Image 1 (cartoon, helix red, strand yellow):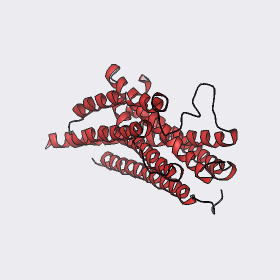
Image 2 (tube, helix red, strand yellow):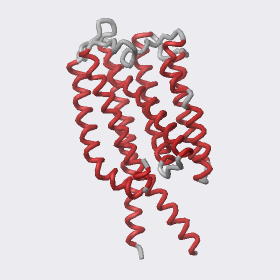
Image 3 (cartoon, helix red, strand yellow):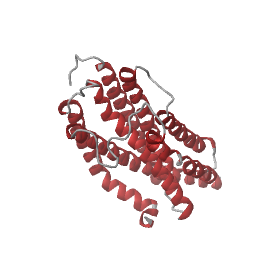
Image 4 (cartoon, chains in turn purple, green):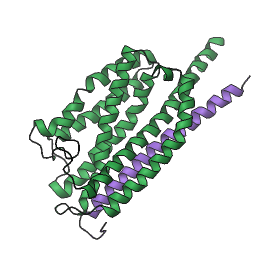
Length: 47
Length: 240
């Protein structure tokens, strides 16, 4: 890829936004999963 | 499919499959991005801007595929009363909405340098925007209604009625005059893209599909846990 070409900012913007949104979505889903499974474990350990 | 109706069986299968699905996703993303940013040539007309295609087109494909999966899951919930079908559709919606949003915004980022405009209300762009609104509406139903069975019934109707828009998005470029280019990969007569550009596009499409599969399985596992916790909390209130 030629970073000196015209309109390269649009390409970087598209890839950057895709990375941020998809990584953000993955982190949110994984964090929610971890939180819910931890709460399930806590409930199981309770008498 | 009925084999997976047991939530515990589904969760243990998802736990076993997820490491492999994540590994394939990461490998496909690395190969796809290498192809898209390094080996694929610049277009003779669009120049480097053509590289937006490798994130825009897979996002658009997945926006359509995920909504189709939601409609199928909703139909299964109605016809077979599959216990996990509503959960599958519910957790797929935010993932599909992100893909749809990405397709709209990356398309806009491509449109400005090539069409000299961020947005036009032509058939393809408008139907894609309607698809995004359908995703938002579907999620709003689950958020707005507290009683899960009632929310599920209304959400199924939204998913199935909204599915009418999926073929409209796909064929809008054939049915109406559109600024958007016609289908160039999935079309009669085979792909119209050079192989050096086609393979990174297909690999990125596959990477997005595996990413969806991984996120969907994790989100369904979470939804199963959330349902169990809700039942436990209700039982706790009943005991008091």
